[in-house]
Image 1 (cartoon, protein in one colour):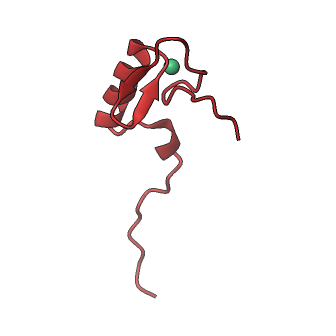
Image 2 (tube, helix red, strand yellow):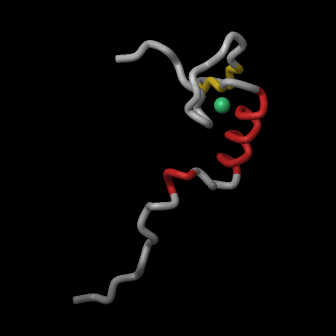
Length: 59
Ligand SMILES: [Zn+2]
């Protein structure tokens, strides 16, 4: 596996000054800010494909 770490927000390889936020690491302050903001409002891109909960009629 590639040992290089990648930004948790944009996926770019980390540069010389990675920004650490808890367990996550980002390529720049902007990404750290964006990631935290989107996490707060639940707007993660990988969660948009999750099926919505629909009430099923009893069979
Ligand atoms: Zn980034």
